[in-house]
Length: 334
Image 1 (cartoon, rainbow, N blue to C red):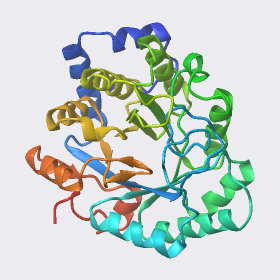
Image 2 (cartoon, one colour; image 1 turned 60 degrees about the vertical axis):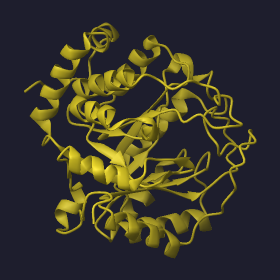
Image 3 (cartoon, rainbow, N blue to C red; image 1 turned 45 degrees about the horizontal axis):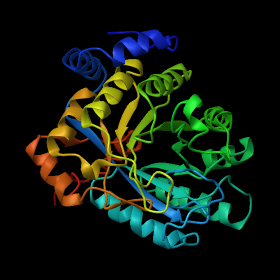
Image 4 (cartoon, helix red, strand yellow; image 1 turned 180 degrees about the vertical axis):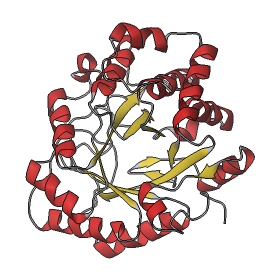
């Protein structure tokens, strides 16, 4: 079994990323089988608990106040509504429930206290509870940890060199610092990237290098494909090749062998065969449900049919393994 490394050079990563695709797939699948049960996929669910009005200018985001995207604003959901959505997700097989709020950073007060109650309640259901709320202070991270938060998502999005072309209201180092705050609080880290925003292969090697240098590696690495949204600066970006997505997933699996690699936004444009290649390359988690925050996602019934056709099994999350019966049935399979 290969040792886990945090000292990869960009040259090494470039060599892996650009290797012949059959060789890359074979190497990635070997690493995957050394560390995970092949054919097991964790099902996660993502809910927007507060939508729109974000002061950030992320060029891909429908929730930015800088763009007219037609996305209706929504104030913070009630704890009861979030619990209802979490129960629905669990019934569809989700073992991880993620809550996202369109904030630049968390502010102390009634709304944050309400989020803490949501975390306590969802965690009490035996699900891995994840939040993405923007930047955090160390004290806020500690309070989330005390409430039972299992994971915190804060994506790096792209390479540091390309970052300024996508976002100007927050620096790359702001993102790295937030990840460090999460790690210091003892919360598992979820971070990743968005493909198809106009980045080059050099940028892709650079963001994989950034992720691979985290010590320890993020427990969860999300790989998203841009969903071009009307009204945003990236509305006319063409879709990326599925093989490019596979290359990124395979390289991430080789570099970060113990991390969950999550095939995230943009799946609705992928064929079942493209999904299968992604799973073979080492992706072992999907987000189920017809919405990911404000973006469309693949239909639940299509995921159920895919699980059946490919003999995929739902992976129990860490907390679900501690609470028997928490895994439910595969998405879309009653």
